[in-house]
Length: 124
Image 1 (tube, rainbow, N blue to C red):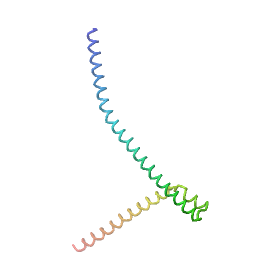
Image 2: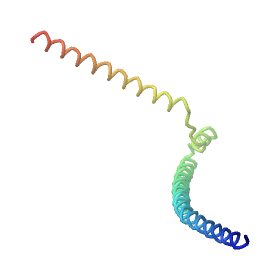
Image 3: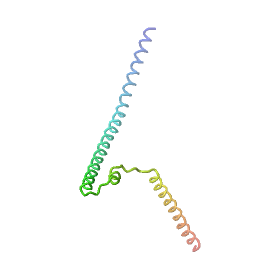
Image 4: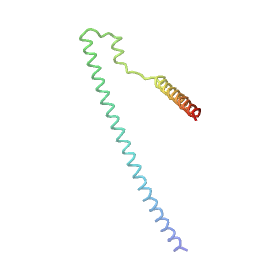
């Protein structure tokens, strides 16, 4: 009885070792994908930070020029320094417009080609 238990124990240990090896191989792919995602996120973050710094420098230069010229007032300064806010409605309106144009195009094509088929049938 004890030999059977030892044999089963060895088989279970071997099966567990195989499962761990398979898990390690599978997790290597996920680690690689995660690393690529992390590096991509860092690159995008860096690019965004660089472009924001460049915009801030340009804004500061513009403010300096306006101040030297005496054209800078509090209202203008606020308008220049406030970040532009995009609206949900602007993007939504554009999408609805393009959807409408696509539907109209489809209707026109159907009418155009349906008219040609009728003229071909009358001639035949």
